Image 1 (cartoon, rainbow, N blue to C red):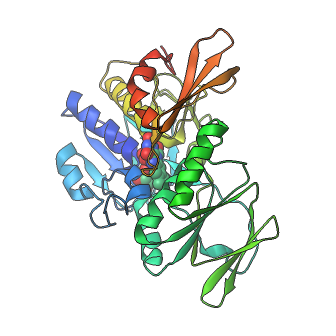
Image 2: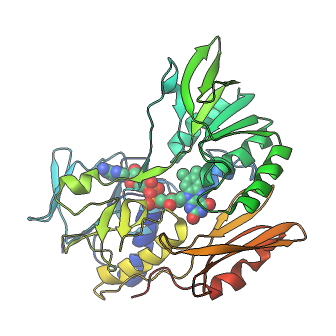
Length: 382
Ligand SMILES: Cc1cc2nc3c(=O)[nH]c(=O)nc-3n(C[C@H](O)[C@H](O)[C@H](O)COP(=O)(O)OP(=O)(O)OC[C@H]3O[C@@H](n4cnc5c(N)ncnc54)[C@H](O)[C@@H]3O)c2cc1C
C-alpha cells in the first residue's frame, strides 16, 4: 500500500495526521519536515514571557514521541525539494518516494521589506520555535526592543516583552494599532493600555534603516526621528509558502489554491494551513486549521468531505487589555456601531441590510465573544 505523505510538522501537518489516525490505523504515513519535528503550539511564542515559558518548555513532544503517537515515519531535517504529480513521487535528497496522497502543510514565510543600514541583517522575525530560541537568547541582554508592525503579532510581542523588563517601541505606517481589525476607538483604547506598560508608538511611519551604534542599534524612521534599541523584531506579516507547489506545476495564487475538499489542481495532492488558499481565503490561524484537518482526514480515509468554516473569532493575546476580533469578510460594505462598556468596547460591524458581519471586542466586552460568534454568518459553507 502506498503511503500518505505529509510535508510539514506544524499545527497543520500534525493535526491532519492525528485526525487521519483516528480513522485509519493501517495506511503507512510518512511525515517530512525541514525542522526538528517537535510538536508545539506556535501561538505561545508571542506570550511566552507572560506565561513563563521558555524555548525548552514550549515543545509538547519531540519527533520520536510523535512517531510513536501517530504510528508514522517522521523524518526531521528532511526538506522536500520537489514532487512529480504525474508519477506520484516526491524528491528528498537522492531519494524518490511514491505516495498515494500528498499533503502540503508547509506554512508561510515572514515578509521582508528592503531596509537600509549596516545592521539590517540583525532584524529578527519569529515564525517558529528555532527563530524564537534565537530571539530569546538575544533579548536576555536587551533593555529596549523595536517592533516593526502593530498587527496581531506585533501587538502581542509589545504586550509580552515588558514582562522581562524590556522597553518596547512599535513602528507602523498605519495611524493606529490593529488597523485591519479594529475600529479606531477600540484601537486607541488598546494603544493607551499598552502605553501604560511602557510601549512607545511610532505610528504613520516606517523603518528606513538599521545601523550599528557601538554595541546597540540605531533605527532611523521615515519621519526623520531615530530610536536606540538592542534588537529589532519584524512582525509585518507572512506570505504563504507556495513556491514548491508552483514548481511542481500546482495552481498557486496568494497561496496554494485548493477547493473545499482542500484539493489542489492535482487530484492526489492537498494543502491546508498557512500555505493554503481555500476558496480564495488565506486564514493563517489555528481554528481554520482544525476544521480543515478534520475534513481532510476524512477525505484521505476515503470519505470525500468539504471543509466548512463557522465564524472563528481570534483572541488577541494582549493580556494587559484583552481583544477579540471577528473581522467582516473583505469587500463587505457596512459600518461599525460602537458601544462603550464599563471597561471595554463592543464594536459591531453591520452590512447595508443591517446583518451583523463582524465584531471587535476589547476589555470587559470580550465576555460577549461566544454569544456574538453565534450570531455571525459562517465564513465558508459547503
Ligand atoms: C508568534 C505567532 C503567534 C500566533 N498566535 C496565534 C494565535 O494566538 N491564534 C491563532 O489562531 N493563530 C496564531 N498564530 C498563527 C498560527 O500559529 C499559525 O496559523 C499556525 O501555527 C500555522 O501552522 P502551519 O502548520 O500551517 O505552518 P508552520 O507551523 O509554519 O509549519 C510548516 C511546516 O512545514 C515544514 N516545511 C516547510 N517547507 C518544507 C519543505 N520544503 N520540506 C519539508 N518541510 C517543510 C516546516 O519545517 C514546518 O514544520 C500565530 C503565529 C505566530 C508566528
